[in-house]
Every structure is written in C-alpha cells, then in structure tokens.
Length: 98
Image 1: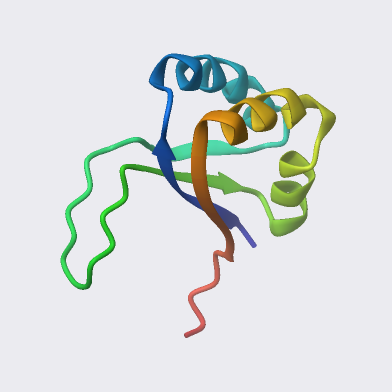
Image 2: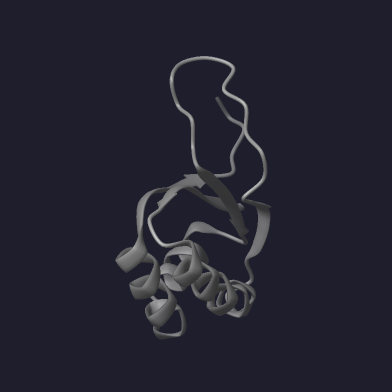
C-alpha cells in the first residue's frame, strides 16, 4: 500500500534551502518516491495550522519511505535541511479504511 511523507517546513535560510531542494529530487526518485505537493499554496480551512512550506511525498510503501529518509543518498540533503529549517514530518499509510 502506498505511504506518504507529509512535511511542514519553516525555512530560516532560503538560499541554503534551495541547495537542499536540488539535492533531494534524485534521492526521492531513487527510492520509488515522487513529489505530490512541493511548496504549493495552502489555505487553512479549520484550526490554526498555517504551514510555511508544505510538502507531500508518495512512496510505494512505508518501508521504502523509511529507507529513503534514513538512506546515505539523502543524508547530506537532510543534514543541510536540518541546519536551516525547522521541520515537522510524519509518515502516513495510504489506506482508506477509516
């Protein structure tokens, strides 16, 4: 079943974050992932959540998503992001059994 990584990013250094974006794309695709949303406009319909930068990645399954997140290919980019941004990130199964 597909799995999604959902990310809310508060960027502190946009110039360095642009380098992060360049490094990330190839690592995501190497693990079978794709960007569903990458920084698109958001609008809060309920509550107070107002992400600065909202990203959704889709992977074939949760195992591949976690492999990507902890991979050596993504390590440099992840370290760069963590140095210039505050990130909230979750992994969600793509089931509709609710």
